[in-house]
Every structure is written in C-alpha cells, then in structure tokens.
Image 1 (cartoon, rainbow, N blue to C red):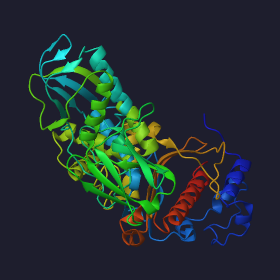
Image 2: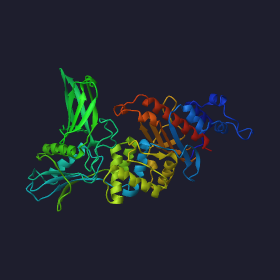
Image 3: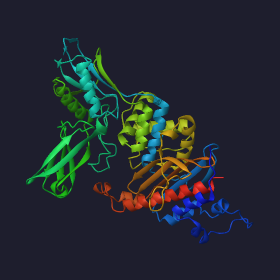
Image 4: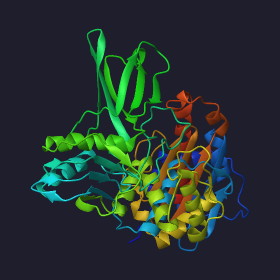
Length: 502
C-alpha cells in the first residue's frame, strides 16, 4: 500500500540534505513560466527544486557526469544530464552481469566441483588417479574442500590413492589478473580459472619476532587455516616498493618492504595460480582424513571413463548473484559472466571476448545501444556505459529478469553521511567506485507507488590517468572525490523523491 508523503516528512528529508525551508527562502532560481500562486507545502517544495545541472555545478565535482531517471511503468524519461556520455561504470556493471547470468543460466543454476576416479576402487584403494575437477565456482572455500575430503573417505570409502593427483581447471580460461593496471597486491584483482578457492585470495599475516618477523600464508576460512606454499612471502630490507610479485613457476613469489610492516598486521593478497592453490589445500585436507596424495598435476582434459566419487554444489545462482551485488566481489562477476558466455556461445577463451559477448547480448535482449564493457566486474579502465543505456537496461531487466530484489537497499543519508531512519522513499541500487570514478544505478520506490529507474556515472579521467600503478590503492584526492560524488547522488535522490511523488 502506498503512503502519502506528509509535508513534515518532506521538510525533514529536505533539511537532512541541506534543502529545507531556509534553502527555499534563499533560492535564486528564475521564476516559473507561470506567475500564478502555487500550492503550499509539497507543491512549493517541488517548485523550488534546482535542476540537475545546478546540482552538478554546485557539487564541485571535477570531470564528467552522466545521469538519467525514468518511469519504470511507462519508460518515460523524466530528466537527464548528459545521458549519452559514456563513462566507466565501475561495479554498477555487475548489475548487467547479474542479468546476463540470470537470463542465460537461470536462477537455479549450480556450479559443481567434483572428485573423479580414473580406475576401480577395491577395499578402499583407488587403483588409478584422483582428479579434482573445477566447474568455475567462484564461491568454493576451504570449508567446502574440507567437506569433500571428508566425504571422499566416509562416503566414497577411499583410504589410499595409488595413482596421481590430477587437477582440471578447464571449465573457464586461466586469467592471471582481471585488470593488469591495478597494484599487484590488491586482493580484489586475483587470477581466475575453472578451479577457484577463497575468492582466489591468500591470507598474509606478520608479527615482529626478535630482530625479524614471523610470517604465515594460509587459506583460512571460518574454521580452518591450512598453510600454503603455492604463495610465498619474503621480507626485504627496503621501504619501497611495498610489494613485488613474480611468477616462480610452481608458486607465487611475493616480497614486502620491511619498513612498511610495523609490529604486526595482516591482509589478503591475490592468488595468480588458483588451481595449484586449491590443489595444495585439498592435499592438506585429504591428509587430515588419512588420505595421502601426491603433488597435484594440471591436466588439459578430463580422461574418458572417469567415475564420479564426490560432488560439491554451490548455492543457487540467484543467491550467488545477490551476494555478488551486496559485497561487489569481482571474481564472482567474472566467473558467472564467463560461464554464461560458455553456455550461450559454446566456448570462451578470453575475459575480454566474454565481455564482448555480453555486450552483444545486452543490445539484443535489453535494447541497449552501445554498451562497451571489457570485463564483467567493471574493474577495467576502458569499460564504458552511458546513463541512458543503463536506465534502458534496468527497466527491461526489471520486467523480464527480476533483478530488482537482488539489489541492495541503498540508504538515504544526510550531508554528514548519517543514515536517515524510516525515510519514506526506498532505493535499491548497485554502487560503483574506482579511483576518481563513482556510479550508482537502480530503482526508487516513491511513497505514492511510483517506481523510477535511474543511473548516475561520474569520472575525473585526467586525475585517474595521472596515477601511477602503486598510487591506485590509496590515491591522493581519491577520497575527497568519492565523498563529493556520493553527496551529489544523495541530493539527486532527494530531488527525485520530491519532484516525482504526487
């Protein structure tokens, strides 16, 4: 049931955004085309709302802005600001990826990770090879692998493996990193393959010990912390660079500057060899169940005639996508996007090729004009979307794919960034943030029952392009830019809640 928006509620919401009665009294906007007296209360508030162009100008936000808002029911565009300007969408792109996966794979799709046998099992002995076969699951974690190792003994009855321990990750192509222009150490830019673990991150922890440090690298989960050797850290007596990475063949070789460590700390680092990482962890977990395995070896194809022993299923795709949109996990977006391309086109060999396939799908299915994504997560610098295209896609996906319930509720906030409790307007949206890039796209439910779709993209590309690779983790000026962008977004949401609520 829709609720009328009272004058008190409107004024309270406006005051929270610095647009209350004092702002109305000080307004310098030109008169309306008609000089007839306007109604008091809500009508007066509507009449004195500044246009989008003035909100953008007053924000002091450098760079470019693209905005559009439309009525979901009719598709009528209500207002816009540079709606055709294509800008980096950042993680707002994940909303499109979710639609792609829902349409192609279906909300009930499950990823599967399997243990297979290449020979017979007699009296607990596998007379052949054991194969760990990934299915592209981005959510597989150490606890799930531990359960598989336990079931291998208790359900499949395996106590000894006579052959090799083989790994297959060919369900998806191997991608060493999503965006090669990111700093090497950021955990949100890992490698990807058909066999992934713990979002392809390894936990690095250090503590001062005497004149040096004790260091651990582990594949921790909620209940387990197995050490790993497929990612190794060496502390170097320097101050810069803070981290270096090298491909050492059998493992990821990291170094860290001692001068940056302090007494103790921890962080997640990206894994570039995800299949070997998962295999080592499973080998450790199998050993804890009394099953000794040889070092894992990668294979290009699963041998014919294998027998399934244990299968782990992920949560349904709808739940995976909901969590992806909530926590903005890049690896999830890339895995579900490439899996959808595999299902739709037959095969995918590169991340960019899969993104291009999704762009073509978006034109065909959602009616977009010129989507230009280079990945499925929005992490890449060269991805571009316009506000008009995003709004068109949101309206189409709202009606055909049920994307709206998967989006996170976006709270309305004051100028001081405090959440406004019990606000009569509800916003469900996906945020997007990169250095000097900010995005927001989703849906607005107004108290009178009107439903709007909107998209906001902003970017200061010269400032972004001027950053060195190392500066991109904590760039000077980046926090100020994003604070201004978010305030502008909130002011626009407040404006739409007043102007388009009857």
